[in-house]
Length: 77
Image (cartoon, rainbow, N blue to C red; front, side, top):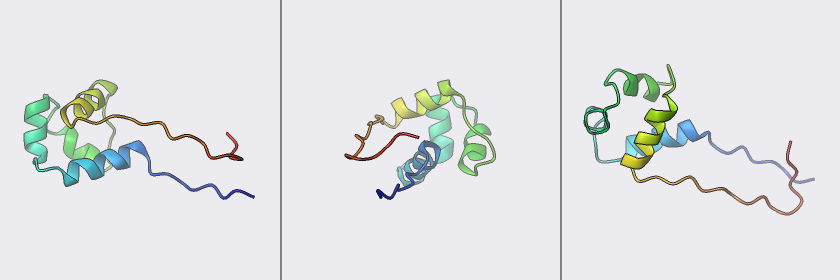
């Protein structure tokens, strides 16, 4: 039996990227136009961000989403 490995959620990956970048949350909010109160709430997991805000963050942080190929024998559920 193939053991399924849980991948981190995209939101968790984005939080890690924001924490690891050289910009403060304030700077990111100012540069992207995302509401300054929304970003800390997202970072704490208190609330999500709109798709528009996520698109803006991805563009600002120069992120791409990469689809992983399934390994042979893995099933979709």
